[in-house]
Image (cartoon, rainbow, N blue to C red; front, side, top):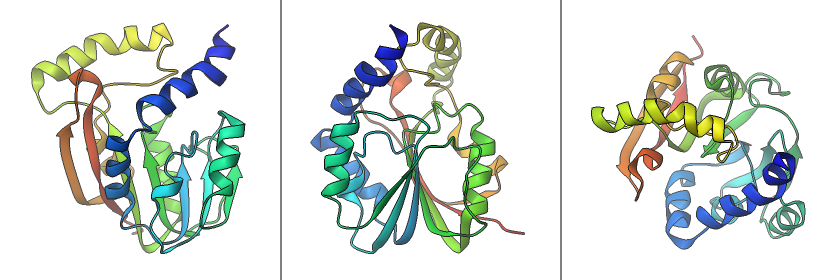
Length: 209
């Protein structure tokens, strides 16, 4: 039953909840700086595809699981650039050092088992001068909300409803641990319940020293 939920029900619910017009504008704003050869980690059902800017030449779409394949195939077919799908976890990227101009994630870092290792891998495959763009939810700036997130996170994980989603990860601190420099960071709350929608949107650059 859990396998059916993970492969079919949860992707459909996710597609519905973050595939609307409101979230589309947030994707556009996030992806605006992206260009050239791009790696998207946590491709999911391909909701970002129509929102990549004209400067993108090619996208490598990485995800460890297959979600809604018929829907994804339609979205890839409609893309303005070539899309290569790769089945792999973010902690072990099968790419050469400094291969990509940009890396993008949207609502991905919450579910990766070891986000610092994955971010370190993303930094490794970014070219000098390249950018990592992200739209993620995570730990609140409000201490009361953050404490509530800490209390509820184990229950949320145990329930299996979010398929491994963590609600209390401090995205900015994870980026720093992985060797990224934050160039832009926008923090905002995008609705309710607040424990789930504390957003981090920004641009980071790799420190290759």
